[in-house]
Structures are given as structure tokens and as C-alpha cells.
Image (cartoon, rainbow, N blue to C red; front, top):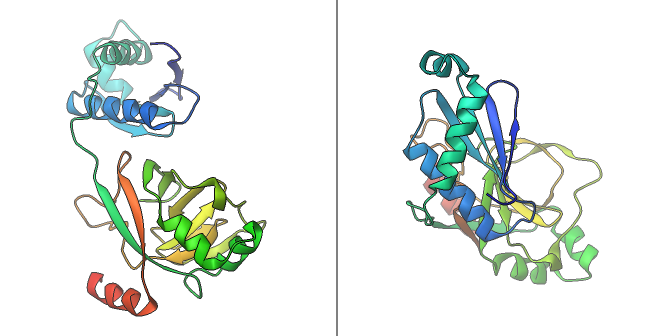
Length: 237
């Protein structure tokens, strides 16, 4: 368990840090751990939330106290998690999927594309080519329901967030924030540089699986025209 540390989050959760350096191998271990706990839940388990270099496990203390009243819920869960880590499978049981997301870049769909191009002394088309020519790993879902934090973007187009965030960003907007890119699944405030928009809905509250993406999946972006955007928007309604 080298480099693995445990931190209590109040009296109902524990965060496990698996390491400090962000990379795919470390994240695969986090996803494998998440799936292992979900497939083998302990009494009182509520949720396992994977992140970039950590996972947070929330639990119901009263249910744990009913089973092991002589120990604190934290100590019980800590012992369980350490045991599970020792017996952690090497591979992920549910293979990740690759999702292709169509994006209409620039114009009203991506009002900051020119600013991003100017920042890097590149053309808009060069920014599009670089952005769409990568495979991105979904490190975590957060900030807003269904919002994917994607790793793997080329540093050639890494761009600081806007000094003044927008109060309202349209659903499906594709943005760049620092060395990351992501897609806004719902209308919300935000400070990322908007370079395009997708007609695909990444979050459906009434669906059995509300989020289209989950941590461990891969994403590719496919450039489309405004006409294709409109056709897909109508089709996917």
C-alpha cells in the first residue's frame, strides 16, 4: 500500500489517496477499486466516488454500529478498505467504452475559439484539428451532474480560464480550462474557454443511467457542421 493514505471526511466518509502523480495506470487502479467495492459492498456502504488520484467512500454510521458496536464506524470501514485494497483485482471487470461526441466548433457554438487561437498564435482550424485528434480519458464526473473532466488534451492548446466567468453557459458547450477539456451537460455558470458545442445530451435526469459517461471511459470529438448539428439536435431530442 505504498503512497496510499486515508483521510476521514467528517463522520460519514473516508477519502483514499492512491498517489500524487496523475496518470492512466493510477486511475485504472482507482476504477478497479471502485468497481470492486461496488461489487462487494459492506453493510452501511452508500457510495464510492472516484476522482483524479483518490476515491471517497461514504457510509451510514448507524448501520455499521449495529453490526460492530464495540468499534467506531470509521475504524471498521478503514479496516475493511485496507483489506479490500490488499485483495484488489488487477484488471477492471467492466471494460471502459469509447464515446464519440460530435462538436460544431467556433462561431456562436464556440465563441472563444478565436481567443484560444490568438493565445497560441494558431488558426482556428489548427485548434480544432489538435482538439479533435486526441483520445481523452474521463478521470471523474463532477462540478455539475454528468460533467466529465477529461485528461489527455495536448498542451499545445492549454489555455487559462476566463478572468470573468460567464453566468450562463449553454447545454453541450465544449470548453478548455487550463490543461483540461470538458463538456457542460447542463446550463450553468462557468469560466472555461468555449470552443464548440455538441447536440448530444450527456445527462438525462430521468434515465436509468443519467450520465452518458463514467470515470474510466474514453472520449473522442468529431467535428460537424452547423447543419449536422441541427439535424442531430432534432434527432436526439
